Amino acid sequence: MVATDPVRVLVTGAAGVVATTDVAEACKDVNIAVMVGGFPRKEGMERKDVMTKNVSIYKAQASALEKHAAADCKVLVVANPANTNALILKEFAPSIPEKNITCLTRLDHNRALGQISEKLNVHVSDVKNVIIWGNHSSTQYPDVNHATATINGGEKPVRELVNDDNWLNTEFITTVQQRGAAIIKARKLSSALSAASAACDHIRDWVLGTPKGTWVSMGVYSDGSYDIPNGLIYSFPVTCEKGDWSIVQGLKIDEFSQDKMKKTAAELIEEKELAKSCLN
Image: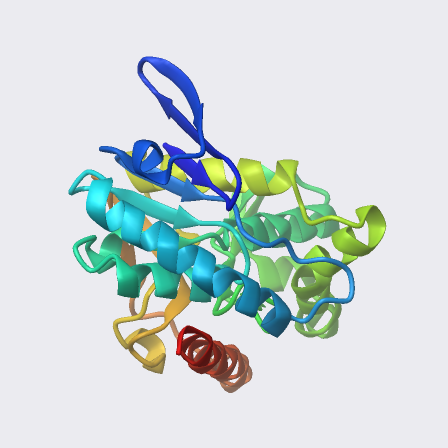
């Protein structure tokens, strides 16, 4: 596994841990690359400010992976703006299959599970199948319309159990959307341990598979599912098996959800165009 930033690279493997500033050495034959480095988002910064700083970083990291990584390398981008950083990486590492480049929205997914479990006073493991649609940003859409929770041995829809559509359609959504900003305000830095835990969850499920009947949220390359434009790294509900992910199909999407999903897609299109202008 490799984690990169502009100053230092950490590589872990069977032989131990190697610290290096040589990006070629860091990427040599890696099978899983976790891109945690970049210019960090700080209090008061707009995502566009972060974008400008990170475009050149991810172009360089992509070139190194293209030249040196294993042919089956799986990539998880954590550093923000994660979706668009992953898209930049995809463009400059064309030999890495598009299905092998993802970004982290599992942190948001876990936060959504936590909010529901707290509301219902159940263990977080008793809640499943929330969805994070779209961008890892304040436009993301945390969706509970297909989520369930187990209470007293029985599994029921979360919306039925919460029995408060106003909370689910307002406070719940904004709390998940704004959680990252709240953490930055509180500690003057982005999430640390919770992000690391989510990255581990993401890789574990991708490699080992998701439990039957359960899906998770991953930022993946859109194939047009749910009318999301092709060519974006967009968070979808996915299941994983034998090292591959598949977008969950056939979910009924109501008008409220469609509007939220389109808005976050529009932001990703804007970010994509901004990234192109930065590259130029």
